[in-house]
Image (cartoon, rainbow, N blue to C red; front, side):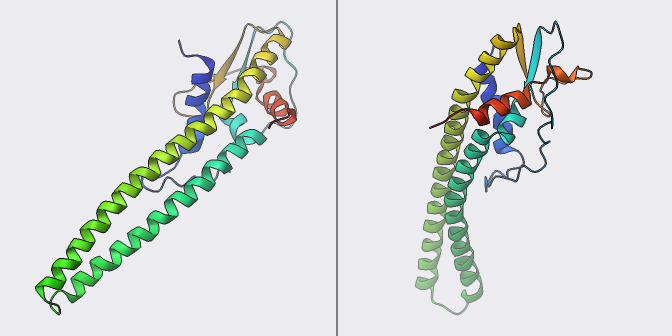
Length: 199
């Protein structure tokens, strides 16, 4: 059985990586996510369970937005350098193709060696950037987990619920076909996260 922290990471991970090309890993805007409900519906009398849409909490809470921004800034920095390298490789490739017949064999050989070196360096830089991006993503999720798990546990105890389920909109999450809106505790969790004092 998955623990709550592991489940938090799995559900929220989709927010950071949704729509992200494998090469660029540049985060996409999260405007497509649904908005926080305007009013918090009352929990139905006698309710034993509730649910939280962790993706919504991550995209709409101040803590989640800070984490997304932190990851986005790092990615922009990491992958902008790769674009410059790729442009340099493309320029040298075009130079070799266009001037092949105009230069001697030794010059052409040197350009090809330079191109191979640049391609190796770019591949290494891509791999290193991906490792750093993945680590930053894990750090963001771990920080969010530290904030949300105590909030959810406190909410469960306060509301005297047996369980709070995690749901997600897409990709294999629990789908709710018919539910009392009062069982959706997402807005309450966002409110509490935004009201809590963080370092």
